[in-house]
Image 1: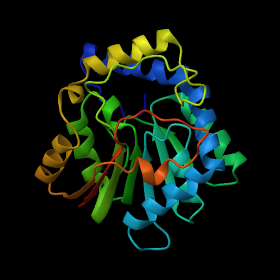
Image 2: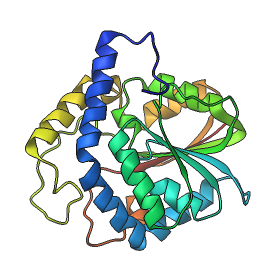
Image 3: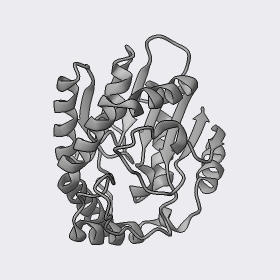
Image 4: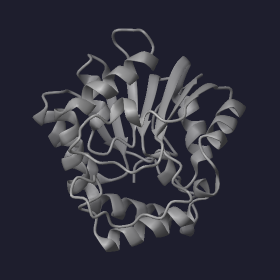
Length: 248
């Protein structure tokens, strides 16, 4: 995998392989929901939040980490920004490229490890990421790398939930964004989550403490779900969706 640390332990290698396989298996179902978001009211709602916190320049260089099927990359490319989306799942990146063509947006997509970025230092004006950090084996190393590739004054916009104490289970609602997830996949997801150090921390308090230790200035919105989830046909989980805004 591009960007993977060659000194990674066998245990870490196994965790990464398991995570990659899980998201490969989820790619088609996940992409269908992101397509629905891009075509509905959630898209403009998310753009409103992003515009509030991105640097006020017309042409930004933005890195979308854990791009999945390209939701943020496609939205922000439509604003005229130069966007690169990275993900460790080849199948997700296949979906992202297809979606970019379908929506007529130009964005670059690369297979890369969020913990070891193949970019020069101080390259990006902004980093955006959604529902990624809860899945990472080493969030501290990720945050160090993200700090490294941001320009001075650049911003990190991290949207996530505190899933550490949550047990994922099958939803009975067909409107649920997780309705298509199979029991075997849920079992795998719970097992992966339970093996990650980030699951032991309460968030976003832990994130702000660590980011500030790196020199970021941080601001938290404890739950932006009411601001960005407007599509009645898409039902998300009940956990707060926090927004962590950090400036280098």
